[in-house]
Length: 324
Ligand code: PYR
Image (cartoon, rainbow, N blue to C red; front, side, top):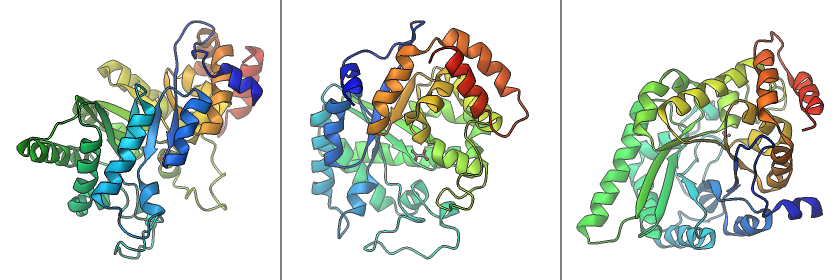
């Protein structure tokens, strides 16, 4: 821990000079102390559903606005990306009437619920716009499976902006709207999606759950497939390349980004923005400071061609050989 504290204010630059942005994930006011404690450069994923999950009733506009204001005040110049409500499916709220679903991970979660109940999503967007008046607002939508869903969600942002304008309210000085990439369907529609987004963030937990068709809450199957495998890493490489080609800022905010070996793999694929759980920020930063990506990329290119189900061992050897 003392070692990581020393790294707090050290910029995350690889040995061969690539600047990496290390952000952290948060969801409640108590998580905000992790920003200063870890030296994370901002919040890459603020999970707004946590406030809803710890409330006895639907948080009112005022309390949503108060939380988002506190988050932005605390973060100061550091960017914060708010993810709109990711509830439904297994995350049920007792005060919100929802239907029982046989297969909740594939059910009406997240943006699906938000689009079916636009009043709920609009209230949240109103709170975000109010909290961010005069400053930067970054908002992203979870579980987008089609370009139309993103378009519809983005339209609600426009509707709320128009509403605020009509009332003479100050709007954010800068508004960026993004999509989470966690449904595999988007991999074959990035050419259509990316021009509509200001940024994207890859939610690797869900993306791999859906790619491998393995429920990540079911211990019988959750560890059966390794994210450090050619199909998973090739999917990520494809996303990174399409984003680079279109100049779309991209980050990775799944658990993967917080584990040094996995984060090393992400860097070799070209990702430069990672949002890690607070405990992962120090270890990932230490890895970054010791990594030579030029050498690592050559090794990774070979591993991606492997027919193995997991290349974890090979990647460990590569990291060891390069003293990462
Ligand atoms: C995911 O990885 O699926 C997240 O939602 C972070």
